[in-house]
Length: 103
Image 1 (cartoon, rainbow, N blue to C red):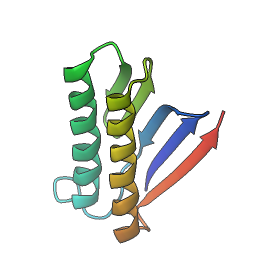
Image 2 (cartoon, rainbow, N blue to C red):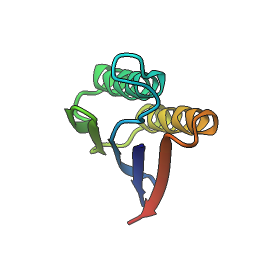
Image 3 (cartoon, one colour):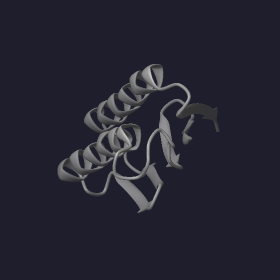
Image 4 (tube, rainbow, N blue to C red):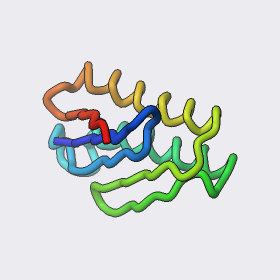
């Protein structure tokens, strides 16, 4: 299962995505591919606008995004990413878990 943990105060501070969905075998898993595509596209979009606004760590089955500098566009891109992940979860609820944590 893919686990998404969103840490927030009044704004999103960090997002951690970990695990594999197990929907299909590696290379044919549309759930993992969709999550990866949504998240990496968002990271690349934010970095192309302001490369100092986020820090991220990525490895196999893991992505951690820390928002360093909030702006209207960064916050909108992050919210768009979360909305897309939530829509995907509606279709594949057995394979994605999303938790929001107030810090």
